[in-house]
Image 1: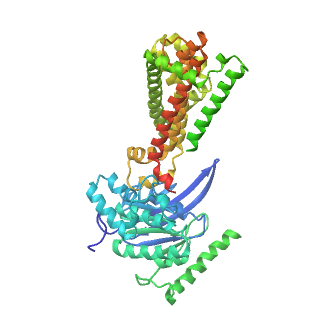
Image 2: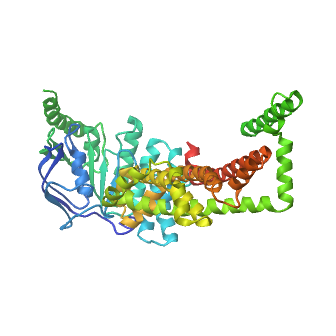
Image 3: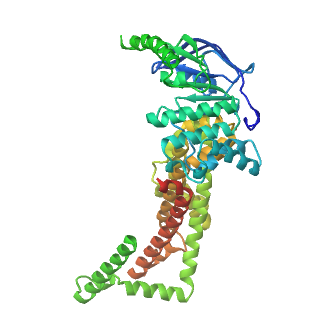
Length: 264
Length: 249
């Protein structure tokens, strides 16, 4: 791919091996994740799906290196991780842009940390701002942007650092339904160019079927892997195709069992 | 605009009350100086150059004392804000010493550092350090962990986290702490100069009391007020410039 990622195209392989996580509060330990083993292929977009509080964000935070697992480990291309790292870009639900920096400065934050020369930074930033359609807003500050625009800046910021893996924690959860669908289409278009390894946390089944190569359904708390659905649909997906709705209803059935457990 | 009008209104009220008192003789006019008398004292002191000297001496003491305290508070604040063992060691000591009214220690400073400049500067440093240290530490500790995570996942080292995230994120709190500290410096310099000083605005005020010259007392007080608001205005302007993104909301 000639147009692919700045610092080398394509993704890395992520192996999650026997990860357990429990949180201790006032001396009482509560399990959050139980025995999660999962392999994400290079260039694959994997969706983690499950009811609220099932630990899917916790799992993402462990892969990001923000919190350590209680047991087990995470490997990137065979090397165990010990903390956050630039090869694993993160897109947060609440955007988490640096409010004192402009859109451009936010996007070039990563490359500048790496000591990329200023001229090259400008190039990279311009390219990714164009990719997310924000070239016209380059000199604005985050407070001047709508939620959808902020999230596009956050995606550009993550991609501009040319990570091989992008971890996305309900990135479109705070957006209205229309903006959300547009963002999904944009992400899927970007992914056709960039071929990153993406782990995408969501509780929207439609979103998961629209984006994912594989959907991993988790159980309600404490989180375990309940079922894995490979989505065999064309790259450009039609939300109204019968195959699409078939996947949707099948996954819905499995998720509902878990949601029902929460209410028992 | 409103600020300017309020100042003018204050001057008018002062003039009306003091000149009114002079014609009505409600109280001894010497006890309530008019704006004219205060300006006259200032002019006569300016003529022989002593006003400039007093102003300079006080400003220098404030600048040195406040500057030293600000640098110490920033350095120690960063250490304590980022390194938990340091916080656990330093905090109890600070919290024990902090509630003691600084003026209670003023005589000790004179005993230790003598009547010269050192005792005044040291006293201002001591007094202004605590509120600035507490404010700066609190600002640093309040930095959103999500911002740190975002930067760490972009590859920031510990030093880069400090320089590129912690300091800018804590800047509003730091500026507030500096303004508080400076206000306090103006506050305590008077006390320091009341005791054993031969120059400075505080000394000028004390001299006004000793030689029974209320106009001189008022003039000294007004000059301190002007000095304080000038520097506060500068710090506010710096704050607005550093935080101009906030105004865009």
